[in-house]
Length: 315
Image (cartoon, rainbow, N blue to C red; front, side, top):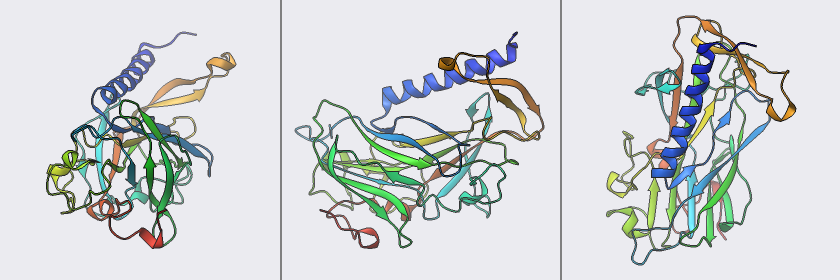
């Protein structure tokens, strides 16, 4: 079977993008999401990912091990931005300020038919029990009892070692009429090395034994977390949901989107998706970024920080 030059080019771009992403994370990320997931699995199915705990608090004297971690999902009026995707690369993101463009349900659905929107990411994430790094953990839930994040305590990670906090994500679709190429969900994460530290942070977080992994370009940051308190390389805790062109196919109206089918003439160990052509529509492919609001960031907590959400208590 002859493979077109265009197909080879697209495949090369995909490998290049993944390689660049991994290299960037290895070079600059500390707290980070360690893998991507795909849209379009069966309704109710889940994908698994992890938050990487990649170093101790190296701004303290002496260097201090991480003993607790708080993670929050964007669920309270999150900031939503859209960028045009060219050759698998997203351009500059533009914040969406009008409804429905600035609502999650305009981009995520429970099936490819796009008849039921995913109104919120609350409940879409769930902590996976693991005691590799932290021996105690609890999910944070809102008033509707949906998970909006989690807190892990009693950490035992050695200073020079790396760890992972696993979680799972409920599957979503981008929709039959959508030209969304990928959705980036940005979690806010606080790594805590000194249990005496708590907001507001008036000096650099790293010197206080707290490292905040928040995008410091966000327009709305709560006063408890000023830009000066945010760790360098912020914004690395992104979970990227890539579109599966077989299970969640692009409509014909999209511009140059891959049309794929499952390859059945390959050995079982090398099964892959085969690009059979490209859409010839005029609507550009887009990338959607969902980021936490100031109200979301205020949910970052651990024992001693604020009031537990919806009555949660910490052991």
